[in-house]
Image 1 (cartoon, rainbow, N blue to C red):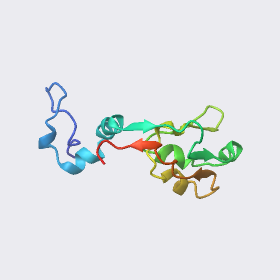
Image 2: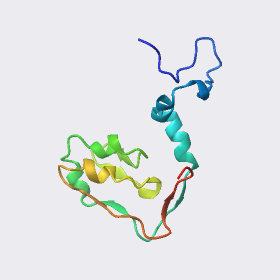
Image 3: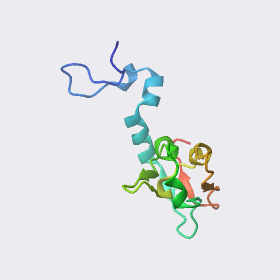
Image 4: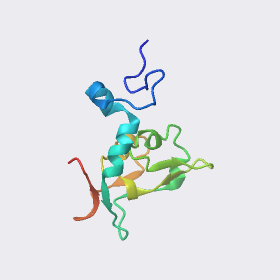
Length: 123
């Protein structure tokens, strides 16, 4: 089994020459995704959230809580009591949460109002 293409070489300083790494591996690298997300800017609409959990009690009955695992921006976080804590401010507006909450349909998702939301650095 070969090491992940982004894994540091034995004896190296930990830095990799990304030009030598296959493009697909760079795209799927979680650290690369985090770096790209950090370059985006957000114009948060404090007056109106574009996503909301309809009923937090319903989340207690959801065994899989896929919103936590599938959100690429980690907007959903598990609480100690089984609830789901949600923060829309870092949302990348992909709509994944709305799709994966298919058992209870407990996520209300709309596009942000004009002028609000994420502004992608790379388009």
